[in-house]
Length: 222
Image (cartoon, rainbow, N blue to C red; front, side, top):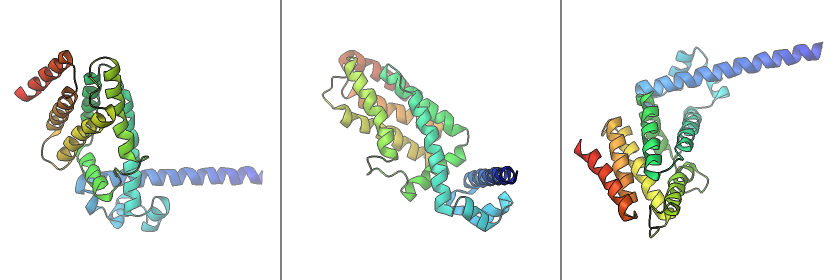
């Protein structure tokens, strides 16, 4: 009986800790969206969450640890979007990816802008590691280019391992420009798609190149 009571007590304690941690992260999201990551202060976060500063440090950590958790959660969401975009033909795959990303960012635009800026500045989006965030996200365009070569759409004169990262760079740069306020989400969609289609056109066979350039013309005429 005593063991069951102790187990029940531990379960309740764990649930309470999980709820507090969820509250901390929810309020951190709101603060970042309202004021940006640089303005996030643990004291302010504690007040909004109705918790003590030591509790926040114990359950999540300091400012950098909070950012790391938030970025990790965001990356999981972005990976799911990327995985859903593995379709053919290749230009539809990239169009779906970019449009789905834009729709996702639109659910809380202020938060995502601030989170991407903070993630870039903190080094959480580093490009050097073979296991890091960059390595994972650049793999999708490489695989898409490989499928396009097999499908006879690309000539293969530019290796997928070379073309893929250039394509990823197009929508990564467009995302950075959007996050820094240079244009809105429609601008992100347009700039990213134009860049992707022009990259693909550089190695496309004639019929596919014509199809891609028609899409570019449509995007630039609006």
